[in-house]
Image 1 (cartoon, rainbow, N blue to C red):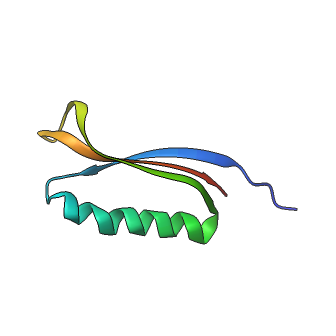
Image 2 (cartoon, rainbow, N blue to C red):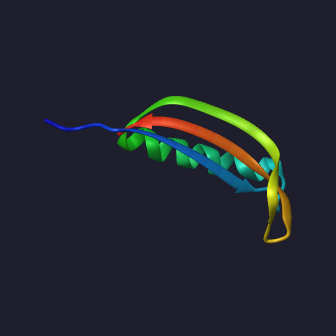
Image 3 (cartoon, rainbow, N blue to C red):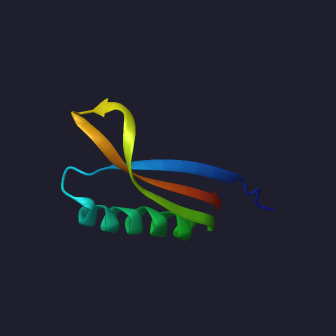
Length: 69
């Protein structure tokens, strides 16, 4: 019997190379989760302002994923 747990992960991607560079990363992480579990909810919040700059970047691309694995 395998025990499955529910997880929630908020990913923030750098927009240094533009929003179009985020799509392959989002797809990559989504497929990694799907290989090892089940995606229950996948919500792209898009470009949002960070609470404080990280590496001199004021904005990031947010993705919220709820999954079971």
